[in-house]
Amino acid sequence: MSAAQVLEGKVAIITGSGNGIGRATAKAMAAAGASVCVSDTLAEDGLRTVSEITEAGGKAIFVQADISSEEQVQKVVNDTVAAFGGLDILVNNAGIGGGMKRIHEISADEFSRVVDVNLIGTFFMTKYAIPHFLKSGDGRIVNIASTYGLIGAPKAAAYCATKGALINLTRQLAVDYGPDHIRVNAICPGYIDTSLGRRGPTMSEADFKAATDRREKAAAMQPLGRQAQPVEVANVAVFLCSDGASFMTGSIVTVDGGCVTTFNYGEASN
Figure 1 (tube, one colour):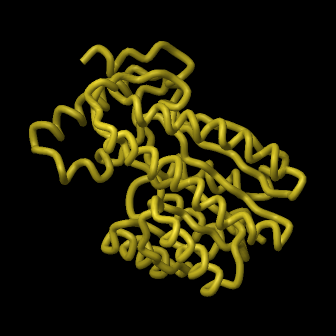
Figure 2 (figure 1 turned 60 degrees about the horizontal axis):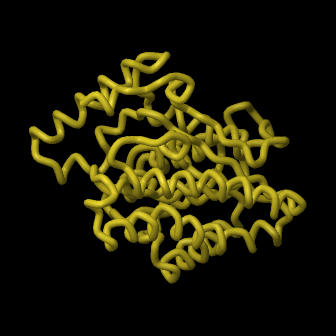
C-alpha cells in the first residue's frame, strides 16, 4: 500500500460534505482509498462532491439527510453499509452557526436548532455507526468541533456551547469505546477559507463583504497570518483515521494557525 492509500478498503461517512471542510474531507478520504458516503442536506452540492470523487477514480455515493432527524440518520448508515458492505469511519462534520447574536437576543427555537444539528445530530450519527464498529472490532470517529469550543467568542453562544460539548463528548466516547478498538478524536479548525460556507448566498452583498473582511482581518492576526484551506483540515482527518494515528484517541487537535495560542481580538474589535 502506498502512503497515499492509507485508507484502502475502508468505508467512510462524512456528514455535511457538500461544501467546505466536509467536501474536502470526502475527497481526501476517497483519494486515500476509502469508499465514501457523502451526506448533506443539499442534493446538488452533495452530488457535485460525489461526481468529483468518481471522476478522480474514487468510490462514492450520496445520501441526502438532515442529521437532526433520527430516521434520516439511520438511512445514511443503512444505505452506506448496503452499498459498500460495512462501515469503518465516521466524520461528524455537519454543523450550523446560529447567527451573530448575544444570548438574550436568541430565541429558544434558534438555540434549539443549533443544538439539534451540532450536538443531537452527532449523537444520532454516532449511535447508529458504533454498532457496525463493534461488529468489526474496529472504528474511527472524527468530530469536527471548533476553536470556538475552546474559547469564548463574540455573539456565538449556541455555537460555542455545542462545539464545547462536542469536545468533551469526544473525550467521553474515547473512554467508553477504547476497549473496543474504536478511536474517537476531534479537530478544532480556526479560520478556514470556505467563503463563509452556506451563509454567503443568504447574505446581502454588503453583509457578505463585511463578514469576509472581518474574517480575513482576524485570520491575519493569528501566528500564521492567514486562513487555512479546507484541505488542510481534511488532511488531518485522514491522518486521524489512518493507522498512523493508532495510539491517538480522545485527542483534541487544533488546526488553527496558532489561533488559540494567543489572545485573538480580531472579531471582538469590530
